[in-house]
Amino acid sequence: MMPKRFPFPSNPIGWFAVGFSSDFAPEAVVTKQVFGQDLVLYRTSDGKLHASDPHCPHLGAHLGHGGRVEGDTLRCPFHGWCFDGVGQCVSIPGAQKLPPKPVLRMWPLLERNGVVLVHHHPDGAAPTWEPPPLVEEGWTKNRTVTWKVKTHPQEVMENTVDCAHLIPIHHVDKADIIKGPVEDGPMMNVVINLIADGAIVGMPGMPNDVILDVTLHGLGHTVVQSEVRNVGIRARQRIYCTPINEDHIEIRGVINLAALGDEHTTEQVAELFYQAFVIDFAMDFPVWENKVYRDKPLLSSADGPFVQYRKWAKQFYGESVAG
Image 1 (cartoon, rainbow, N blue to C red):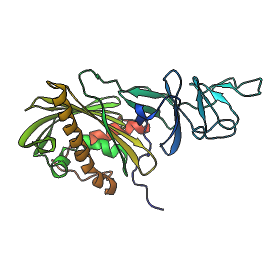
Image 2 (cartoon, rainbow, N blue to C red):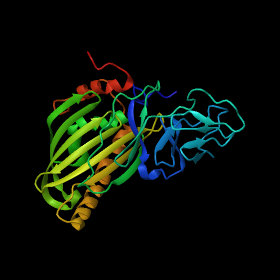
Image 3 (cartoon, one colour):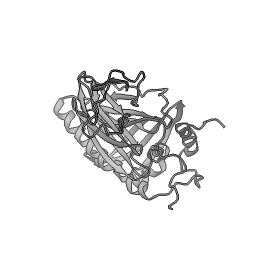
Image 4 (cartoon, rainbow, N blue to C red):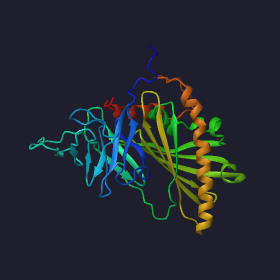
């Protein structure tokens, strides 16, 4: 057997993206593979999105293969059992009695700023926190991208504190942590200042002075508030990492730009920043897919606060962060 690649579970605790809101049409029943299993998502007639375990508790039919939405319920394709949004069976054709308690496991679900998040806990425990919504007024519409990468969410989020990689991988001239990391339970914030040539966003030869205000919401969701100080442009990048199976994750990116002087200029610059993000972020993929995890890395004075980040990350596997 091949040795396990990472010394921590493949599926951390927390909120993880399973798609964009636009992926789930009214009354459609969609199957997504996440956390090494299928998850069934469906939008009822009231517009509310639900997520459930895939198999009917009766005789095990897959609800994503032939199941259908009827009003505010999901009907099993095999014997017609019908479940409401909390997993309670509300109808069984020909039966006089119904199960007294919910029998279909439903997953905690949020729609936040055009992204669908579900809460994962290996024991099915309820969430103790939620990622906050973002202000949308004054920002461009979501521009999105999705990748499948052979890595782990913890590895992706570790880049937050790894300023040293920005120079060789992303070709910046200078990168420094100027604030943090500051921990607040499941959140961690760090502010980075970098100097980089503006070629990737259509400003070749212009050194850009950039502030990246980065907030991690667990290991599944990061919000980066970016400001190019020398030209007064603000952008917002969101990064969502979701385990698919033991080896691979899906990474979703969402880009917005703060509105500029006129709509045409705003859209042009927003597209430049989107294309730059798609190119720049993917530069890490070959490293992530082929590196090994060093539990006790040989660090230098140029490296960031890896130890603090990894200690903070332990809480998402049910481990204490004390000590």
